[in-house]
Image (tube, rainbow, N blue to C red; front, side, top):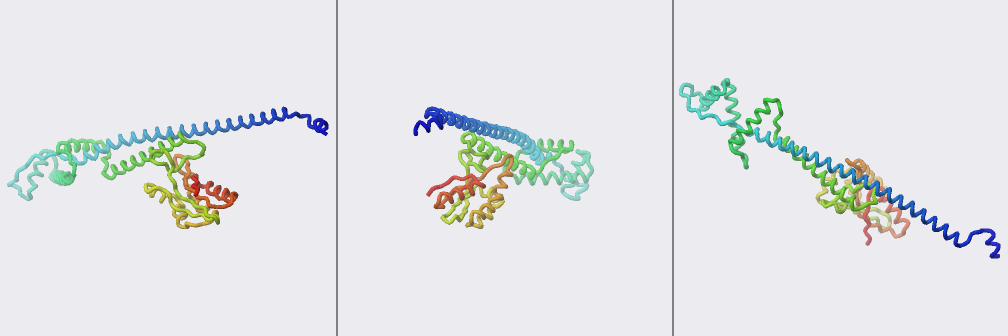
Length: 309
C-alpha cells in the first residue's frame, strides 16, 4: 500500500519541505516590500510637514516686518509739534486761544480756520498722550508725527490701533499653526503605521489629545463623554456634530455612526491636510465577535486607544 501511494504523489518529504521554505521566503519578501512602501509614504508626509513649517516661519517673519512698520506708524499718529508760546492779543481778545491761532497762522502761512483746526488737533493729541501709561517723550512724538505726515503726504495709509491688534491676532494664529505643524512633524518622526496625523497634539508633540471617551456596554449601547483638555474647549465647540453626540449621551452603534459622520467630514476637510481625532475606547461587549464588530464601527470614524478594565 505504501509503494502505491509513492507512485501516485511522486514527492518526497524533502521536496515538500523545500517547497514550503520557498513559499515562506516569497511571503517574507512581499512583507518586506510592503513595509518599505509604507516607510517611503511616511517620509513623503514628513517632507510635506517640514515644508509647511518652513512656509509658516517665512509667513511669521513677514508678519514681524509688517508689525514693526505698524508700530512706527501708530507712534507717528501720536506725535505733535511744539507750538511757540503766544501772549494774549490785546487788539483781538475774542478767545484766550485767538492769539495762538494767529501766531500759528502766521508761522505756518495758514488761514485762520486752518490754524484753528491745527490747534484743536494738537490739543486733542496731547490729551490722548497724557492718558497713556507708558507714554514716549514729546520729542519722540514730534519725530513720529513728522513721519506720519510724510506717509500721509505720499498717499500711504496710517493704520489704526484696531488694525494693529488684528495683525497681532493674525500673528498669534500663525504661530499656533506653526506650533501644531511642528508637533505633528515630530509625531511622524517617532511613530508610523497610521494614514493621517492626529488632529490634536500636546505642546511637546509627544502624544495625541483625545476628543471623547467612548464606552460600549455589554448590550452594545454606546456612551459618549468629553475627554479633551480645557485648552481645547473653543476648538471642540467649532467641530460639527460634537454638541449633538454629547447631547445624545447613550445610543446604539448605528446612531453613533450617524452622529459621528459630521466629525469625520470636518476632520477630512482640515487644512493644510486631513486628520483624525483620537478617542479612549472601553469595550465591554462580552463575546469576541460582537466586540470586534463594535470596535470596527468606532474605528471607521476615529483613532482609538483601548482601555481595558
